[in-house]
Figure 1 (cartoon, rainbow, N blue to C red):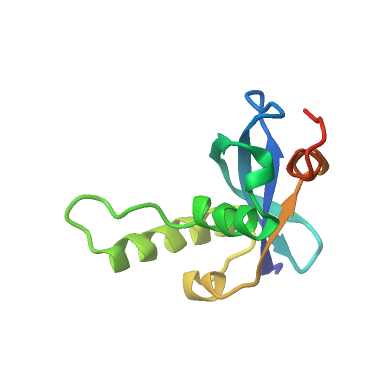
Figure 2: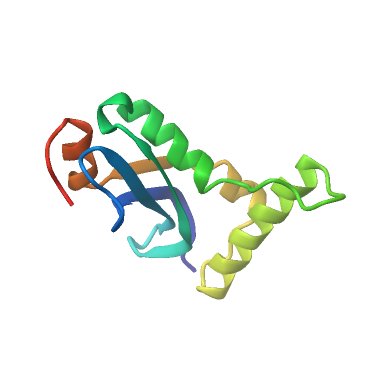
Length: 128
């Protein structure tokens, strides 16, 4: 049975991107030991002004935060919110045929891949 070996967040420019401001989408996927990938989240993103003011390391850190656990629901502790988040991702993987314990999933390496257009804009070029 396949199992997850790492997480990858893909950052792509979205339709609101321009050379003077950015708007990106972030998609979190689990990479399985078979080489297949399972989309865990595809509804995240963020934006701001001035591509040149955003270092690669900051984009990568922000990407991990954006696809990470949300604020806890009212009345829940942060710990409960985090546990619910990882349980939800674990259920998504299980439904895709790759059962993974939430605690194991939480400890997987998490890479960030910035699209070529994102990197070009960060370097002051024109993309889109």
